[in-house]
Image 1 (cartoon, one colour):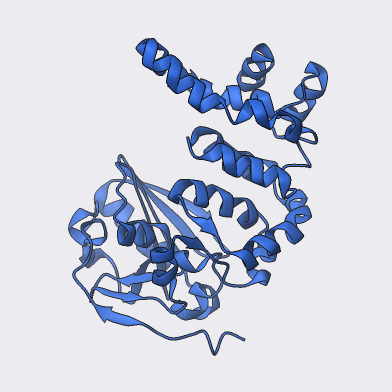
Image 2 (cartoon, one colour):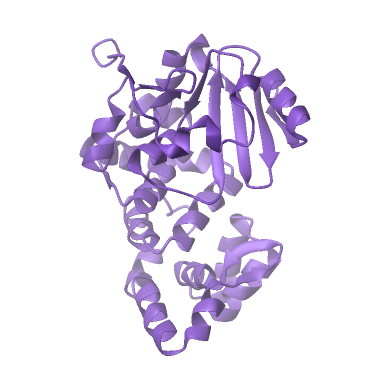
Amino acid sequence: MFVSLFIFVAMPINLPPALSPDTWPFDLELLTPPAYLVGGAVRDALLGRRSHYFDLDFVMLTRAVKTARKIADRTKAGFVLLDAERQIARVVFAGGTVDFAQAEGGSLEGDLLRRDFRINAIACNPFTGEIIDPLDGQTDLRLGLLRMISRSNLEDDPLRLLRAYRQAAQLDFAIEAETQSAIRELAPLLSRVAVERVRAELGYLLSNPNGVPWICRGCEDGLFSIWFESAIDRFDILTKIDADADKLAAIYPELAKEFGRQIRDTIKTPLLAIAKLAVLANSDLTIAETQLLRLKYSNAEIKSAIGLL
């Protein structure tokens, strides 16, 4: 069904600095071709987005785990086997992580067609400088759109439904109409996803200044109804938190530091995110605690949220 969509676009370009092997924490010669940089790193580089923390993902046709282990050994970095069956491993450096995965479907094309959104299905060949864009994700980058590759890809991993809202907030993108409709219809499938994964995506939205409108839309579309049944009733408060925090911080600069403070050194949740979480939770303290326990928040996070309530 992808035949009409699959137009292989490969063109030599001057790589954005973020994609240049010169910026990597290991030498290109340690990669065994064919190997391709894929996903968020390529997307963000094409958008001109920069991050102090690098997060690189490589798709390899063979020897993904062996390559990761070789790079970890040569650079004295950490090695983590993430999925032995699917051949996925991570190399952990001081400034970020590099993941290596065996191509799903046995080819780069097959792997890209299994991804979530077209903007994340763009690859870069680091040996030639070619951008490989079979689904024309670069057009969606220019339009500022999140467009699904297929409905079945969202069904395969329902966390992708929530990830659409997180990426829309992160990139300041819109969600394409057909994709939005599919997300609403598939929202009940989120109940199948491990709550730890849901909590991580919610955490990104709570910590992002652009996240609240997408949290509100997610509630309206049924993505959070399993955990926060009546959150819609408190949108008027939720939508004011960031603006009011900015006003207070302008008057009392020390408050800006306090709002961004992690509630504990070992728990990377800022106080302002906890305030938003408290608003999402039920105003009845017993019910609120149950909601947060179901999402497996830590005792420190629950205690802080209940204290704010």
